[in-house]
Length: 247
Image 1: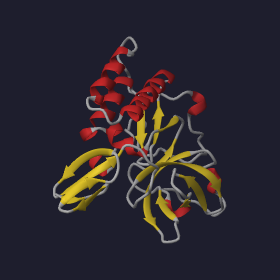
Image 2: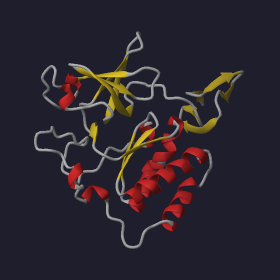
Image 3: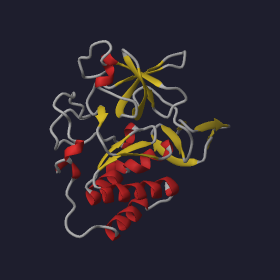
Image 4: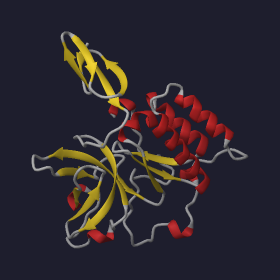
């Protein structure tokens, strides 16, 4: 095996350079750290929040060492100069993709593409970026278990930010599960523990997927606002999901 991320070779042997979970993808072996800050790389899909609005761009906080500017041309909307605040305001949450990292430290992001866009309502929860593969699970098993038992809608950012939308009870249960994963991500059998917790706290009756419910009147989009559903389809469409191998 050859050393991959989180490993190094000395004298013909491969050692871990960080404390974490080992995995192999022949011919590479790598170790995913159990903790650490988010370091962006091209291709990452992340959840960010708007911190400033200018005439042609927005500044996003994506939990990286620097803020990331999102230019109005990097959105699915046709925007005139000076009208950026009609589409995104300070505090809004978005799903974007990291396009490039410049030598100056600037982080280029785009909101144009499948599974990207503005997130309406919901709640943002933070976990360690190193825990995101455990949140997703092997082949998406963990996130599928969570959504099946709660009916919540979830968008996962590789920067450790996770958006949850649903009933207050669904949001509470998903938040508790994410706390469990964040604190115990190194343990085996975690998917079974999460499912046991969700079964023990399940409400009476079947769980209805939140995306099929009509939103309250105060959350509905006004007729003069741009359509900002991040997955660009009907209300029944599902949010973006990411495979473990993409992380």
